[in-house]
Figure 1 (tube, one colour):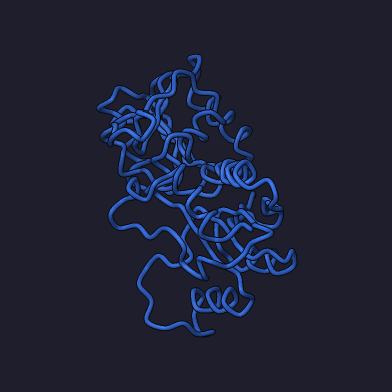
Figure 2: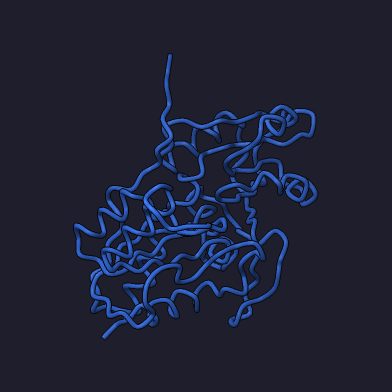
Length: 265
């Protein structure tokens, strides 16, 4: 019989906890390791819509990219957002596993998937942080190449390929050719992206000043959304569990979505 522990170990064999950032929180954040599992729900976030979907499906385990518990908490009660989510899982007997920055950095993880989704060629780890058990380099940012185009046209391609309802971008005054990608919040990597000769960065959660300075610094910046740049990896998590545990029912969340809305005038 499949257990939470066996599924946890298979996932962390793909993206070892040693690859996570020091400040991060990954692993089994709620539930019993030895609980038997017959059905798994996979989503980007352990949010109320995902928990409710798991309850309706009868799933004993939720696997997500983002952690259920990120900041230290002082109480678990129905008076806080985190508390309500944790209580909902405990009361329903649902376990929660997440792989966060280790999945960002792992070969075949968030940023490899994003680079592939955007059609980059010759995908490379920008700054290697080590090698895995198979001798493959791992690290946060990926870069690769596209046929030369403009920032506007490439931003339009990104929106189409990631299913963005809208995105923000800044034209740095250079053609798009050597592109770096960092799913989620990777604006802090702009200096490293420039130092490695990239003309474009696709990421999310960019700050006002970063977009304002793009032309001065000579870099095209595309903020395609946190959900949109990371959600494609959920298909990878689903595939890992199905491959290792063919007896399980593994479901990719149908309800989970970005809650960011766009008002057009």
